[in-house]
Amino acid sequence: MKALQFTSPGAMAVNEIAIPKIADDEVLLASRSVGICHSDIELLEGRYIIPFEYPVIPGHEWSAEVIEIGKKVNKFKVGDRVVGECVIGQEHFGFSISGAMAEFFIAKQDWLHKLPDNVSYTQGALVEPFSCGYYATVRADNMDASDTVMVFGAGPIGLGVIAASSAKGARVIVAEPSEARAKIALGLGAEVIVDPTKADFLAQVNEVTKGAGASVVIDASGKPAAMASTLEVAGFRARLVIIGISVGGEAPAKLGLIQSKELQVRGIIGSPGVWPETIRFIARTGVDLSSIVTSSFDLADADKAYQAVYNDKSQIKVHVTNKAS
Image 1 (cartoon, rainbow, N blue to C red):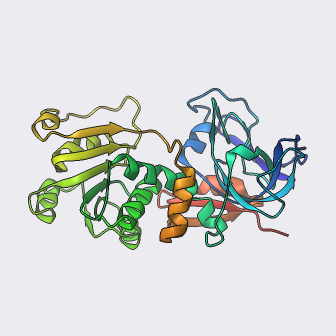
Image 2 (cartoon, one colour):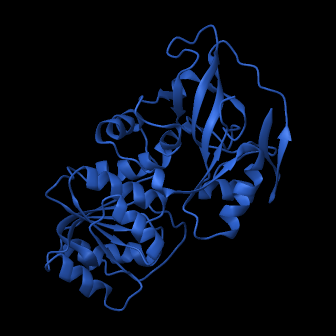
Image 3 (spheres, rainbow, N blue to C red):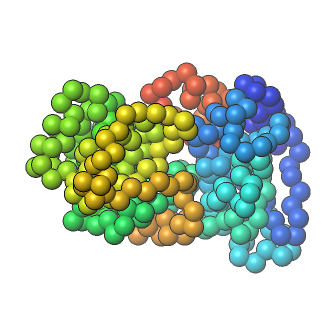
């Protein structure tokens, strides 16, 4: 079978390797759509956050079809369409455990969730990043249609936050300088776009919120300056959620606003425990993030897909597909 392997820092190739054999408690899956994440680039460059060994097959944002089940598997059958979680205890699927960027791969049934009939394989491969954005809205306690939500960043996670917030009925304002990403944000439910690089950024936010500020502020940009700005655009008793990652980043911040505005500030990582809820939410609301997939490559050209991520900064989400024969 074909599989993309990271073989050493900065080196990768699509290789022919043996189809893996399943144990009694495992499932053999045929990949259908696999997304590329910034953390995959960190893995390729040899600087992922937990230990791993080369060669490794990446791919933690995926959808697949069940091809074979082990004797002890009782939750799935051949032909089921599934997605799977990527944080398994201390292991990370697609990082410390080889992932889905292959024609076939194996997983334990407890990692898997069935895809609803109205959710495509492309949408399925977006469940992982969307679950992070959805989780941010969950952690912004009781977000609903009464809220004005300010989202910093319209990358894959930020766009998920925008779609989830809009589907919950909230008014969504987005801080994003890219016109292309702003256009997609509007298509996913944003009502107002403001450019955080402009000198009058705070004045614009003040105008569109009529001086009240946002009741929920979510940073998905991972930029220290944006994290600092969340305090300034927040209204009185606003709920702030930081999901963007900036390890060691620094920026001046008006910390006194946390007290004077009685702000609730919360940092989160990933999407622990909310995958079933996320999938139900997608199926029920019809949220469709397919518009964030800006390029798609066949599995045989998976290395070219990574090169596109490296070389073309206009890409938002690149997918690698493996069509059923």
